[in-house]
Every structure is written in C-alpha cells, then in structure tokens.
Length: 268
Image 1 (tube, rainbow, N blue to C red):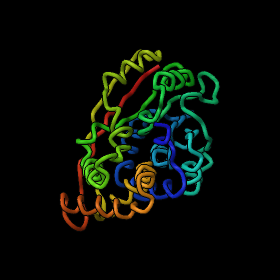
Image 2 (cartoon, one colour):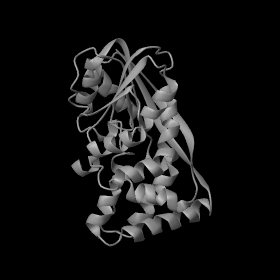
Image 3 (cartoon, rainbow, N blue to C red):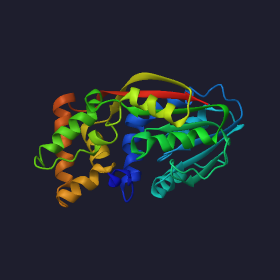
C-alpha cells in the first residue's frame, strides 16, 4: 500500500525517539560492523530514515569514508539532519528505485529495514548494483515474521481487537511481511548480483516500560494513520490498549522482548 511508505507529521520524531533505540540501533551496529574492512571511500545509504544507521556508520568507519544518506521521505531526513551534524554526511531525498547517482560511484550500499517498502524490489536491487564499484557490497536487512518479533506481534494483536472488522495490519503487512529469504536472494540474482549470502540475527529489544513501546509502534509508524483513518479519536485508546497488552505479557517497569531479522549481503 502506498500509504505504508509515508512517514510525516509527528511520526519521524516519535520513530526516532522510541523505535530508534528499541529495535533499530542493535541492527544498525550489526550492519556497520560488517563494513569495518572499508578504510576509505564512499557509502550510499538508501531508506536512511532518521539516520540511525548513519550514526552507526559515522562511529564505526574511518574519517576517510563519506556517507550519502538518502530517503524518499524528506520529513525523515529533516529529523535525521537535526540530530546529526557531520561534514562526512550528505543528506539527499531519493527513491531507491531510481537513484540520482552515476554508475560505479560507491564502495558499498547499505539499507536498514527499507527493502520491505520497495514496490519493485528487483528494480531497487538493480539500482544498488548499478551504483556500486566493482567489488563493492550491498548490505541490507529485513525483519523476520512478526511472530518472531514479540513487541510488534503483541501490539498488532491488541489493536486488532479494537477494530475486528478492519484491523490495522501495517506492521504485519509491510515491515514483517517480506521475510522470505529465498525470494529475496532470487530477486537479487534477477537484478544481476552473483554472490549472495544471508544470516538470521536475533537480538533483545529493551524499553523503559510498556507505554514507551506502544507509543513507538502506534504513533511513530504508519500504523498511526491506519488507526486514525478508522477512528480519528481512538489513537490514544489504541495506544493504551497496546500498552496494557504489553504489560500483561512482559510485566511492569522495564521490559524486554525478542527481535529477529535477516541480514543479506550481495557482492558485485
């Protein structure tokens, strides 16, 4: 759905504040660690969002490596650039399916949890291949099925009970709906990549309390619009229902749940 790709209004700030440390930072560190062999050059980040991977790249890679961080949503880049001020980073709006860069520009292309949002994955993967230098790598990750990501699963089920005839399923449909690694590997090869490997990475997601998690998912993602489209005055109710379900499952106070993703590396 086209609306699944829209992150605007209050979403970018809440996304960064809540989901950033809770679920995205652990995998940002993982992706950045896979590029430690790069001593100089230029990295392209697609679907950079609020710059969570950008921060990890800046702290992990040498000063001689510059980063072009792109996203289709200007509001997300605006949030990122308010937090990150570095001469090594160039922010630029761009669609990963039609990149505004010449062939063979980058030593690596990185995309954290963005591939699920590409309507035409083969086209986006072909663009990543096109802008890579010979010997360069394309690294990206996708969430595993929602049942393997405990916080998201509990939130979706809780909010669905409020709207049984038309449940908001953004989280299950898009972020957690593209976990078929074999299909992704086939799409990468169809795009022209020869070497493709994958690894499943499991982590723990931590939050100060259940409400922190509920706000992140219900108000800091396009799930917010799904809820408001069904009942403009029920966003707070949905958030509270999600928080109650999380507290019932994980307990009061600080909580922790499993998160799991697949990390794909494709070489040119």
